[in-house]
Structures are given as structure tokens and as C-alpha cells.
Image (cartoon, rainbow, N blue to C red; front, side, top):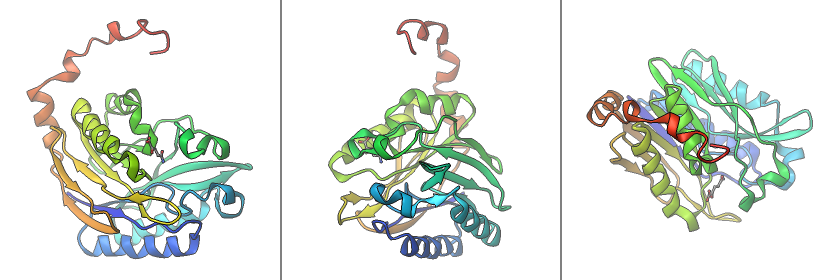
Length: 264
Ligand SMILES: NC(=O)CCC(=O)C(=O)O
């Protein structure tokens, strides 16, 4: 299956420009044969958190109409990265996922807010999991800082996800953490990790290096340090092969994992 990873240059607070750029890249990805496309985190606004009351998408209406139209017209699944949304006067970092029939199959607001970038001062955390199916593909979706919580991604895998999509705005100074954590999440959960980061230089410092990793941990692609649309071929049957070679899921001892530390 061909996955279009849209490592987009997100303009700071430039909502109109960002929608136009996203549309062009999604159309290009579809025209080059992508069956699923993936966008980065907060691609409508960037981290213009102080301007959310002006810029956030009210109830996600604009984004949902945009993704609905493109997924059905182009006949592709869209893992819509995330956008800044507003609901009842509160702001969220929200991912929408549309299947190729143009149906909304999942809506998820980031559950772990990242204090180092002041998210908790401006955003509300979501409180639900992001498990969905795209045709035959059983998937989960998380947002950026979420990847530091192995138990959260494991929960998606235990709930049946074979592919974990990650949308991010991961800054360059911690790019080694990004790469290591993504590879670990793929290996420990024996699943595909398809992770799309953004680009931008001013006022932020995001240098891409998106990644596609298969369930054995082999890195199939690392994005450039500039805007890039990459179309990566993945073979989802690899999940079963790896899981039967080392049967981690059968060998788990969950009864030992609970109660050792109070809140595990
Ligand atoms: N947007 C984010 O959640 C950034 C997370 C991050 O940079 C980290 O180090 O974790």
C-alpha cells in the first residue's frame, strides 16, 4: 500500500496559506498513487497558541468539510494530522481521520499536553483513544508528545492496531529522542509506525525527519530537512510475520504488571 507522507512547511498563524498548501500536497499525493495520506500536527495554525481565539477552527467545521471533500473526491484515506480547534470556548489539538468514502472514522484530541511548549496553558486535553479502521487496516493515531507514553501506544496495539500513525511538530533539538522513541514504539508493539513531522524555521525550529518504520524496527524512510512529499510502499502482512517470529503478545504477563506501581 502506498502511503503519502506530507512533511509540510506550516506557516505560523497563516491559516489560509496552510489550507491552500495542504490541499495542493494532498492532491499531488493522490495523483502520485497514494492510498493513505498523513499530515503533521497543528497544520492549520502552527504553535500560534496566543492567537487561538482568532484562529482555531470552530468545532473543526472547516477542517472536516475540507478533509471530507478531498477524501471522497480523490478516493483516498486521510489521516488528517491535527488542527487547532475550538469547542465551547475551549481549545483542543484535534486529529480527524476520513476514509476513502469520505466518512469521518475518528476524531481525537491530544491527551498528553506538552508543557515545554506551553500547551497546558492554552489547550484542553482530550480523554479518548484513537482507534479506527481504514478498509482492512486496523490503526491507531497519536499526536507528538504522546509517543513518550509507551503504555498509551501499547493500549492502541492491544486494542488491535497494526499501524500507529503519529502526527507531530517535533523540534530539532530533540530529534534524536524522536527517532529513538518511534523506533522503540514500532519494535515493542510489533507494528508499523508512520510518523509525519512538520517543517518551519521562523519563529520555530522544526526540521522534518519524518519516519516510516516497519514492525521489526527497520526504518523504511526518513524525511529530508525541508518540505517533502514522500510516497512510501508498505506491506502490512509484515505485522503477522514479526508477531509469529517473536510472540510478544502471547508472552505478556499482564497480571504481574498491575498493582506493582499504584497507577500502572
Ligand atoms: N508538539 C509536541 O508535543 C512536542 C513534543 C516534544 O517536543 C517532546 O520532546 O516530547
